[in-house]
Length: 204
Image (cartoon, rainbow, N blue to C red; front, side, top):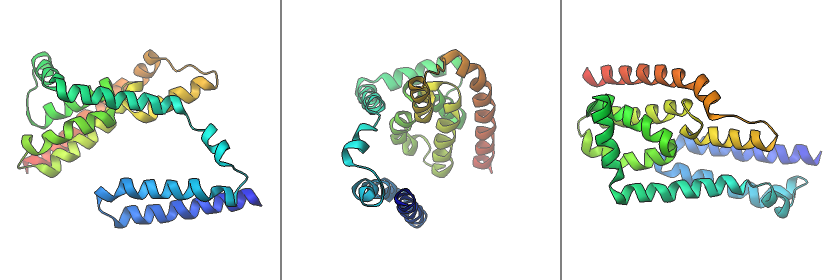
């Protein structure tokens, strides 16, 4: 009975968080998620057999440290000028320069170097300056390319890293080469398809 009360409490908070997501503008989404999580963390011991100490012990601190490290690397890339070097090297190697195709490819490349969340934060400031006439399509391209690129490698998406870490803790090894064999072609095909659709939309 106690566990059912805990599940019901979490579902109620989740429901209202989703409602708030749908009714709010994008800049409020992180605050809504934080408030919902804080409410669950603070009050779940009242509805379920859980203690604050037990909840803290179940936090995967290695994953948190991993993302802290990623964001430190992100700041280093930002201030060192490495992004410009990567952009130039990408254009020289592939022959794809500016435009949506080049932006999509660069986002996919960075997503698999530093993971897609840091890549989006790194590329976001360049959207307004690079695509002043097609802001909506450019943002959609960044969202699509960074998301779909996550299928290529384990590092491509935060969810992949969490899955690999969780599998390892259960004695299952997900090797990078096996992941790439399964995901690279899927990532490439969906990335090209999505970019083509967005390019057609921007040309209309």
